Image (cartoon, rainbow, N blue to C red):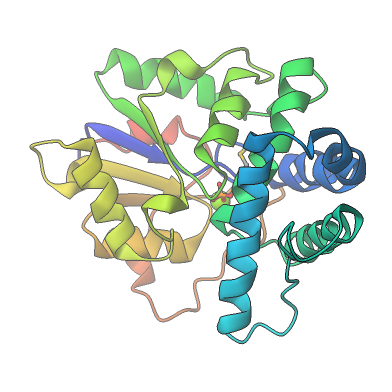
Length: 258
Ligand SMILES: CSCCC(=O)C(=O)COP(=O)(O)O
Ligand SMILES: [Mg+2]
């Protein structure tokens, strides 16, 4: 690893245990959904999230997804039936852990009340905060790139078990910039950040080998992060594995700098 000016971080399995997302954040949505729909139904902001789900469901049907759950428009059905369809739509997408913007935006909207009330606290690995401090002292900027919506990412770091970490983070990206599995998304982020130095001055850290391969193809430096509770790494995917660095703590980034 050579020096970098920017560190770009995945969340789930990288800054945060997968178990926190799956055992706390996801159940907060599935268990509170019915009441949340009833309470927020008349809010125009809330309806904008429902509209995103509705549009995504139409695309899913067009793309031949047989499990897709259509959400009728207000003019086509009664409120109870629409709410029932929204519930089924969300339960289906969450069962298959879809990383799609419409679902992620909806989840982020629901999580807001949980984080603000203190019912939810973002879990961040211990080494992350120490690394943030070291990186900032070294003049490195920190960006996040996660499938979670930007709004949800901001909540996680602002209301974390390590305190409000927002001051360390220079910017946030979600999949509205492109899929984490496509190289072009990493070039879009590079362009959006707008640095003079080449893409290799960005170091991307993620638990997902396919994201790492996509980022490497775009010319970024990369390291795969192996955390307790992450699924075993599967290097058997045709990539040039010798060149994929594996780390277990963000503090290794500095020891690996040349
Ligand atoms: C509060 S952030 C929510 C994270 C999330 O929903 C998710 O799917 C994370 O995926 P990642 O791309 O960070 O692995
Ligand atoms: Mg991840």
